[in-house]
Structure formats: structure tokens, C-alpha cells
Amino acid sequence: MYASDEVEWTGEVSEYAYQGGSGGNIYTQNCPNCHTCTYATLDLMDGITIIPIGMFDESHTLIPKLEIWTSAKLGWLKDDGCIENRVPDMGVQERLLQLLEALENR
Image 1: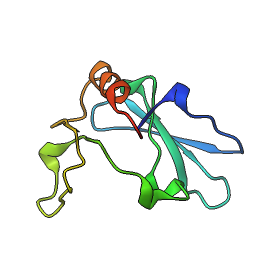
Image 2 (image 1 turned 90 degrees about the horizontal axis):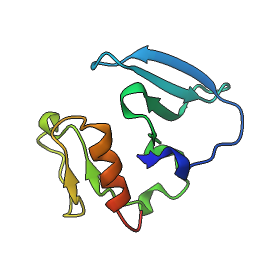
Image 3 (image 1 turned 60 degrees about the horizontal axis):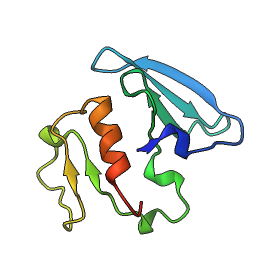
């Protein structure tokens, strides 16, 4: 997750909108050729852009620091101590923005 003003996109995308479990809309921006999701935004998280890890060339170098929906986390998923903040649900926009601002060296 990134603050929307931290990211800039070039190239063509097509948008797919659907209603999420919270009742708010989720907007995925997809490659018009292969339909891979390039990023997503949510009505309930204005100012946040979600980028799938697979979109990064060097994704193995990225270290997560924030974990959401921990209440539904699969028991076999573990971390090596890198997670600094955990949110049991989707969190509220203000809290997630504060966490993003506090995370360094992303």
C-alpha cells in the first residue's frame, strides 16, 4: 500500500469496479492486453493505492512492514519479525495513512 501521491502511472489501463465486502467499491486498474491487475483503489480508503507485489521487478527485495486482516490470517503464514504494525481488520483510512507515514525505508 502506498499513499496515492507517492505513485505515478504511465501507460494504458482498463478499470474494473466491483462492490467489496464492506459495501464500498473497489476499482482495479488492469493491463488492457493481459488483464493483470496493476493497482487498485478503494472508496473506503481514499488516498491509498494498492499495488500487487508481482508488479515490481525486484519484488524479492521488498520487506513488508504492515499487515492487515490479521483476524483472517492463515495459520501457516509466518513472518521473520519484519512486520511492525498489524491490523485485525481492514483498518480505517486515517489509521492506515498514519501507519504509511510512519513506515520508513519502504
